[in-house]
Length: 279
Image 1: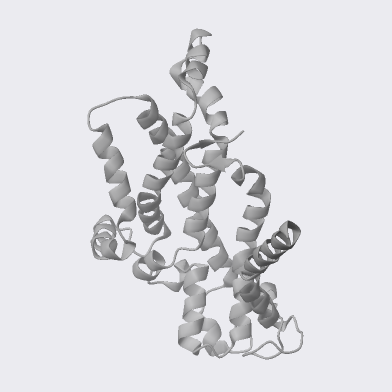
Image 2: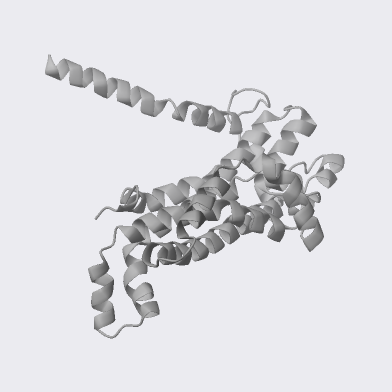
């Protein structure tokens, strides 16, 4: 009876795990499809844009409307990496200070981080638009990066504060007694101990930048600064979804870095627990 129950639970768990693979499987089948609207046959012609960088090499009209795929990939990469580096840098230092120091307004600051993170991005669009316009950063990747950093940093600070809180004071005090400065203890002792948390914050901020759409759509007008999300949306909107196979092929390329990051970083992610480090 116990074995039968265990078998049923395992089968149900396997079925649930396979459900997310269904749309990915359909995406792959459509990307290699000879038909433009449904999975049918097999061809690699939908990936021809990888050779030329142009989505519509045989259509001079459409080829002028859409930017080079490799420039779009570079823009997406710069947005994701820029967001990741700045968020990790600020969060690692701010989380440490909030965790280790008591100062006036500390609780209010932590509460404001939660409020800021909980505010929907769409509520901020108008205000952010005029802020970027006044700073001369409208229609630039730098402007979008700064907005993303402002939105993603509060969560990063909260996560890393939890990791710092889980490290006993004795470890840090011992390094100070041995002659290390406060900065040296932070760099040599604390940062290595919270490395899984830093990796998690870095990964999620990279993916947040990599998949960003609403800020790019609102603040970027020129196609030369488009990212993958904007390019794919424009294909669906302008073409009415006619060449779904091409969109699927482009989406597959869009997914590759995400899959690689999760495969490479799995050993770090499994060590992450809420508010601390699991050894």
